[in-house]
Image (cartoon, rainbow, N blue to C red):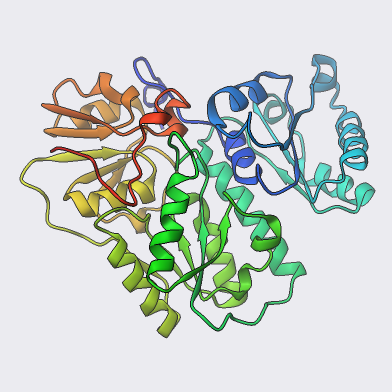
Length: 378
């Protein structure tokens, strides 16, 4: 990638991969440690985590000093984490990286292995570095949970009634005045269709529920961060997955795809190619959300976060402010987070769609419940 594509002069940047790890694991009773001096933890708590003041969670910073960074004193990190774990008795431990340990070459897999040896607690080491978006961190966290289940748990018997796990739910993609609103709406939509929610990875649910995920009939991947875990569960337990975010106008297709997968065990994409609207509409945002909305609105999608080209139906991968600005010039309507408005100068209509993973809490109270309503006047 050219250096010019990495420059942001007018718009914001997405939450980092380390924030994604913390957000994915926040409610599960584990202890998550960011290995950093202090800045990354405060950024996460003040911008990326709406549950911070209302939900107790063991999120810590290692307090990395200059001398420790230069000398590579991993023993200090391992000892501090071990001592804290003995006092707090978490369900598991996760250690995530930031730019400084990336530059000093910290071996997070080795650190995690030693901490697990000393504490006898499941321990994960995530080589996050602050250079990737939150989507990468969410993917790492859920994939690691699924891998641990695959290696240490026996597959449970399938439930008698159709059940589904929702994978990839974090407030970074599902925000609002109450960040659980859209998750509740998803549950209601599925259950009114006769499908019980086995677990939600990982909002409004517990680690105990997630540990029973292998009993579900299928997985519903509602953001790209949940896809790798879905593939692991398909490989280990034969559980098919459906990719698609529940939004008004796509919900019936998601239910239909789930029912088909219940019967034949095949994985599917719920959103498909579609007829474009009369106006040229562009959506910018996380991949599964953007493609799902695009299929309903007859729009194109520009995806600046991590995504798989094979999942594209009406979109393109577009990184960097200049690329997005040039792309937006070709459209009449731009739907994106409010902080994208500076690049919408040639669009006749800019429609704000708040995204906590991009603008933090600034506009979260204005985020709509897309499961029940698409409030766009195009």
